[in-house]
Image (cartoon, rainbow, N blue to C red; front, side):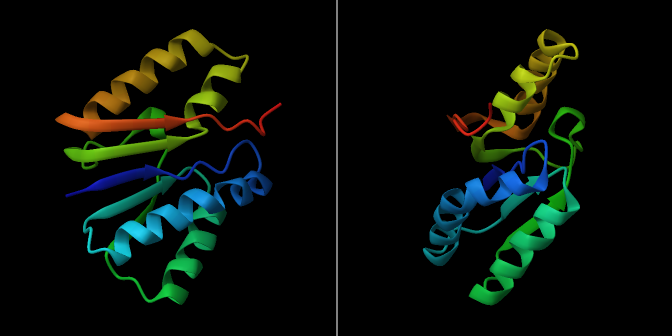
Length: 128
């Protein structure tokens, strides 16, 4: 089983602290034997922070990648579970062409998620 997790750090790196709960859930999946877990973020700093936490936990079944979800690599596809916390919020609140970016979000998600996969989205209520 695969888990695709967008760990969006938000407009500024400071918001990645709000994703600590999601990171804990992600670590639980890994500890229960889920494999091929991939976390993405457009912020190298957020990936570095997550990587240090994963290394501290001694987990090797989690891959991290710097990726822009709206321009997602075709190599990131076929995931059985996709979890998003805050990415769609940030895209929707962006004043620059939000409607087109939402359409691209759906296209990227469709490419990443397995046809029979599950998608879980949560709102990042800290975005103002």
